[in-house]
Length: 162
Image (tube, rainbow, N blue to C red; front, top):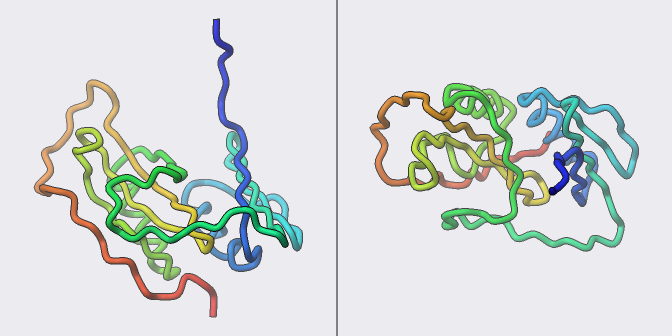
């Protein structure tokens, strides 16, 4: 019999800890995470179950290219589940007030699963972050007026503090 497991921490390599903390202080706050440690070379956030470590390395091993906006699915990304499409939209709206804009705005993606609603951002190091919801099994869903997936244009506004 296979052992039961759960993901408890993720470590991400970052190029600039100050800029990255500015982004994640806002992004993770929307998901109930809090920063609990900060050092010149690392920081960590937790929601009590999952911890995300951000590590600055002087000799980076990872070089990510930014998404083009043409991808149907971005294979390497972190996805955070919330309870409703309204929460996805509310998070997008609040992050926009901090000039953190999604590369894909909130919309339904029936090509993934009926009722699948998501929005997607990238952090300063091009880590792709999705916030999504799907209806509970057996739950009735409202029909969507949206048809095929529409791609959002990537914002050119700054994601860094001035």
